[in-house]
Length: 180
Length: 80
Image 1 (tube, each protein chain N blue to C red):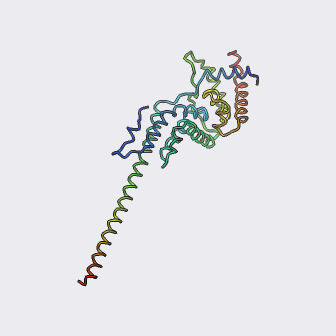
Image 2 (cartoon, chains in turn green, red):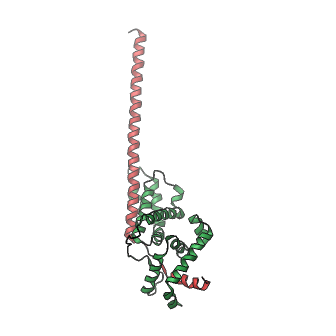
């Protein structure tokens, strides 16, 4: 990250404290928020737009929600709202960016075919199920934490996870047989 | 779904992670957000200084008017 609050902030001693806050929140959370957004929208261009919208809107606010800006849960909710609003505007026929939404987790050789199948299966899932799978598997949150975060009951969240895995199981069956 | 099924599926999913944001995107968004903040702050400062000038102008005009009125009253009271 090249930008810094000092680079953009101080003008003739007339300083806006919100700049520091936005800059440090951005540096701390933007990468994780992008990963969340790309999994939620299943599209890298939409994820980019969502992150940009959230931070630019935040920067344009007269009064920052001071303590909340540094809070990742607050920013995640803002990104989530932006993503769902994009998803509701997106037409079914809209062509999605074909850039990968996943990357191999380890340093070993990537199984391109398997990765493509997993990606395709994830893209087919409804966003709410994909979201819970992301939060559970990639962010390693508990169902309780996910429920608190999304403002849903723990049963709803666990149900979305179970249904999501069930669908993935059907779609990835050939892949799983190879893995076992 | 059986636990074993779900575990093997979770193991497959865990072999991957969500794609990372390109570095240039992160820089671009940070700059856009910070420039917007600075522009907003500068507009506010400009508006505040205009407001301060207007208020100061009223105060000065008020003082001049009051002083003039007092002097005129004094002159009138003195019978000059």
